[in-house]
Image (cartoon, rainbow, N blue to C red; front, side, top):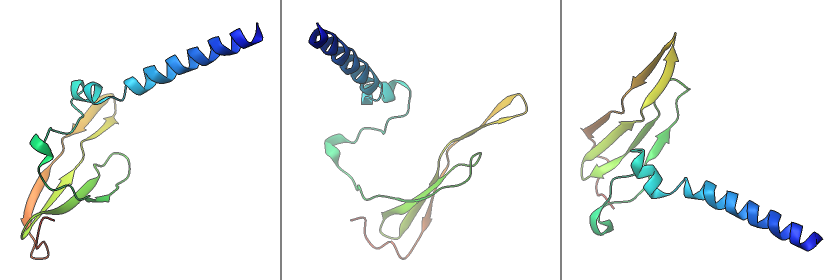
Amino acid sequence: MRELKRGAIAALLATLLLANVAGCSREHQDQRGKADAPVTGRAGEDTPAEIYNFPDGFGDLATKCTGPGRRAYVTTKSVHQKDDETVVTPANAVIVNDPQCRTTR
């Protein structure tokens, strides 16, 4: 009897874990508009960006070389409350000349 009870508890925990993991799927993120854009054939440059975190209420900043002589700066979307209103600052991207960016790989 005790083994049956342990089995039922284990099955319940496994089901809850699976339900939580399923909520983090790519499909779930796509539906919410939060997934990365697809890249055909996984082509493209995949090096990590440098990330600069800002305090709450300000968008974070990411930067990296995006081609020979080019650097991108991108902010995250910022959402915060001001009085009784939700203020959304959209993400922004800027590409500038940077002679230190020699190659994309």
